[in-house]
Image (cartoon, rainbow, N blue to C red; front, top):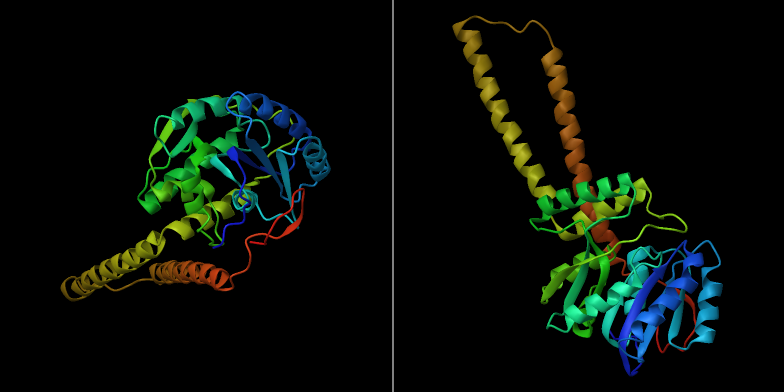
Length: 320
């Protein structure tokens, strides 16, 4: 893929997807500027409006008019958090890139700690939220997802780690090559395998707005992430099917022995009906699992763009 950035003298780029937190943007901007100026004057803040239902784009344009270091990208519709991050990464110019949420739960002041650790020779430094300031169900869902994900992908991903981190330009250049439809920035970063460090950071409570991740969206994200990174569900389906067949054979031998040795006759059809429905459910479930993978293949071969840009606050040289 061709890179979609201008050649600019930028040391640090900050990418933040924006949805449902327009009121936080002025404070986010002020705190980012105050923090980044302690490191360098050469920085940029890329805010990607993911069709936020509030007046987020108007605020982004106002900030960009006031400060040319703010660069706004307005997507044509809601493409989702991870595609919005992709849009921002496609236009970054910095030697170091920070990815963070816009709701101020990821605190801009923690960038100093991330940058300091990166200068010790790491390409990836991510923040580990020792105390997560999220709701009970969101934390529970996250914990369950990562336990299931780790089992199905034979990996060890910590649910206390989100997208907030600092990444070298070579890491981001590698991630730009990932153009599959199922997007998960954090998992892509983990897959690249560059030298990585984790540090403890403070996680703030959400003061404005509410998370756009409903239960159904979290479940869909979990399914997409597992299907995109593992075929173990298919392997488990095959193993389970052979195991059932093996026990069915043993049970058949047992029934034959009971008939010839003890003259035992089947008195009813309950066990048969239960077995039929049980096996039918397994067969339908297995077919559905295969269909899920085929559906994802279908999404990939269409090769649709990951996002469409409606407007930017800067002159872009090409679409991605």
